[in-house]
Length: 149
Image (cartoon, rainbow, N blue to C red; front, side, top):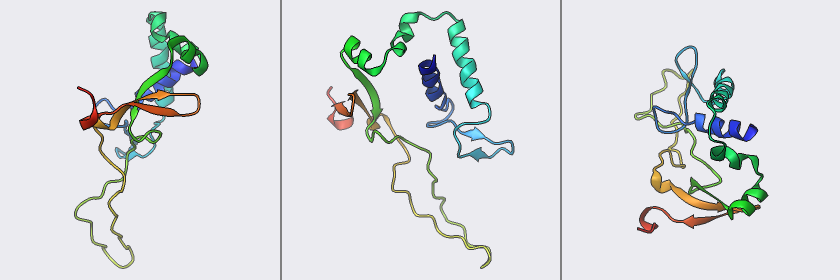
């Protein structure tokens, strides 16, 4: 049950209306940098329960009952899609507005924000296939201009 909860939890982070991570709206209409709103965990529990109450085919989620060693033994390995920069992952970053505002007075200094060094937009070319091993992972398939036809 805990592993199914984790899968649903992570999928719930995906914003259905925008690319990227779901934004959590505050009561005042602004967005929080926090990616877990006040009902996030309750929503996940409700979705897991609804899924289980629908009598899904157990073969669909049977793999969740196994630990890593058993998955590897049973299926010959664990392979998945990951970001090219794994183990890091895309995050929401502050983006620079142009033009930067002027300071309204010397009592309220405004400093220019430098452009982020990290990528702020991702595409399918940022995804790769990796084999996950007990202590590390390795790239299996290259994407983009290097991928096989």
